[in-house]
Length: 361
Ligand SMILES: [Zn+2]
Image (tube, rainbow, N blue to C red; front, side, top):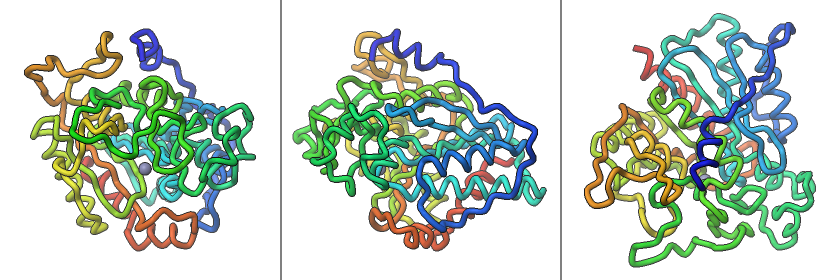
């Protein structure tokens, strides 16, 4: 992306949902069903009635759905969660929403307090993909979009991309996004919009997608306050932590966070040695935020983040930050019973609470 566009993204004005005088009422949701976007939106509007939450619209999806961020607590240290970047991974948006509902219910009843931290949750980064995978392409409003036009060719059971067929998690302008300099190119790399067969298309330009830009905005706004970033995906109960191109301090912090999580849910940890750089599949949200936190700056020449010098990168940590990708579930599933079972069996409420407690002191 060019620098004008980049500056527009990080300086954009966002809106918070207005507060009205209606009283908050206890919300009930216990995985009775998979919610569609409209139902999800309704719950967020109900959550907004609580004085303990601020709801921002940090962007609009390509098909004009809201990308919400939910802010709970007023502390300086920020714990950031997101989910639903990949369309088919429908469990995690429900996990985060369920957690928010229970948390706000408890705060309202004074059964819980939050000190010193601000929780920021983006439950659904890719709402178009989410609706299309669950409820079919007819749920897309703009019939000119790739996801609708190619509906007869797309495999919606495995579709990960947004309405333009772009894998948002390959679209971030990190230093190595889309670059290929290893011996082999990942077989998943694709140069055209996704049809849902493990074909990762990173877009016509880095940072091109509205959903990507919503997160770029958030990351930049809070870069000096974010202490933990956990992005939820679903690929078999794993925790990815670490980046081979970044500092030991960064990698140790992230590994520490991964171990802390694994102690609770027994997910397998992958450290920096399992992470691939330069096989064409970079450009994830964790690549981007890790580099931003390590002091990388946007280069007007390359249109992406860059270390100070290519020859001898001077990579310092901006601050202590732990970043992991949390891959939930054994397999991708649209079965609400299985989704509910994972939430309870793997103790997600406890897990999220414990992560918040990390920063109480
Ligand atoms: Zn994913």
